[in-house]
Length: 112
Length: 115
Image (cartoon, rainbow over all chains, first blue to last red; front, top):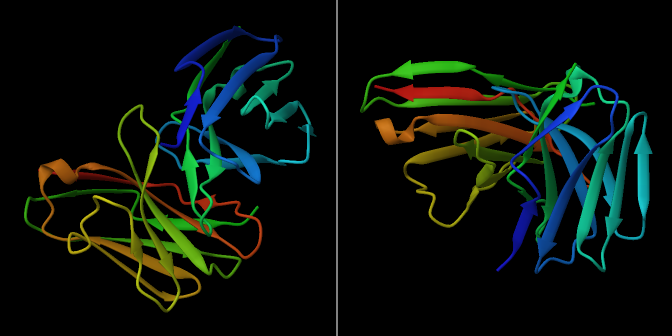
């Protein structure tokens, strides 16, 4: 069956360091992969989309990689700040029209 | 990014009553809207896909008669939780997608508490 796993439920990191979050999947052949941010009690917010033929995508302090051989995406936040503290979700299209399946999320806590 | 408004943000109701949640895309026409349910510290669970002008497509295990979805226009979808019971208490979130690449724009969510 299809599965999406995010490496850890929670990640604590010191301000200024680079946070790296992992998303692994099995039994998918996604055309693209997305990352979302969710704050407590709020809906997710779209951050980045990376296509299967792209190795890397950047947006400001964010960087996403996509390795379709390893079936893995890495999400990096450089120079992390306390305001980056949130839950980060990866999402894959499931092969049918429109639908996304979300990973369980990694809760990032950036401390001073 | 696109704006999706979800209302109400919080509702408390008695067991047996019905609750309607609205989801509006404010600055774009959403051919497809999605309804999710989220339990504490868990990921989003897709309940149904709502297409304008047609019946919603429900995920396996989601009761159609319990969770009524209407998508009457390109900017509005509603979810009605009928005869709500305490086990229906949850965080419900809608999202809207436009044509093309499947980025979803989410509402702020509705916290439903059934007493």
